Amino acid sequence: MITLSSIAESIFDAEFYWKEELKDTRYSTPEEEREREILIITDWLEAHIGELNIMINTHFEVVDGAVDFHEEESAILREMYMMNYYRKQGRNMLRQLDGSTATATFSFKTIREGDSMITAPSMSENQAIARSYRLLMNDSRQAIEKLVHAYNMYRSKPNQVSGDDAN
Image 1 (cartoon, rainbow, N blue to C red):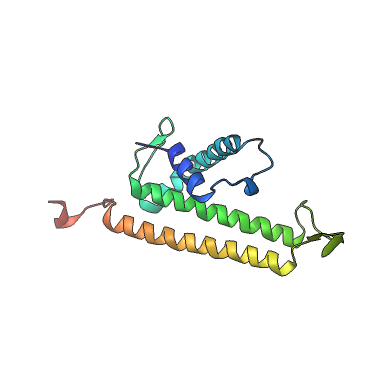
Image 2 (image 1 turned 180 degrees about the vertical axis):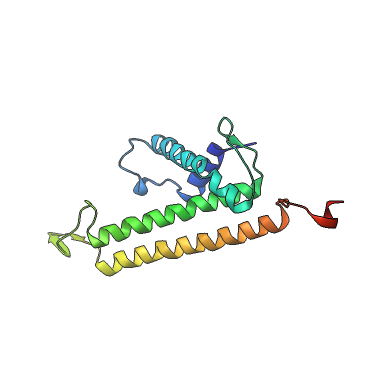
């Protein structure tokens, strides 16, 4: 049995490696950030077991935070999370670009004071970031399709047997 929290830990540690300059200001310590983000990822994974079951023709259930997974199912669920993450990040970037969020929009290009200079990101830089998230999401979608195809081809059992095959 694999616990969803162990999958979430591997996602956080491999994909969102913590660095001081990337620290989320919502959390006071790196340990708190890791702990809370792993809880969020674990909840997402649990909520999408049904979607995984539909994709690979299985009937996995979460029992006390654990699932009777092998590495193949875990890899597909992990990639599903990453695709969702990229889609969400891209959508957030687009919201910033079109002004539909309450995030800070800069009405300046460059501010200089003495030796200091602050430059706001240009519209084309933000568009490139949004485009990059879209490409990452498409890469994840293709990876999911390959993983699901391979799983269904080699791992899943037929749902029905009829005719001479039943013997």
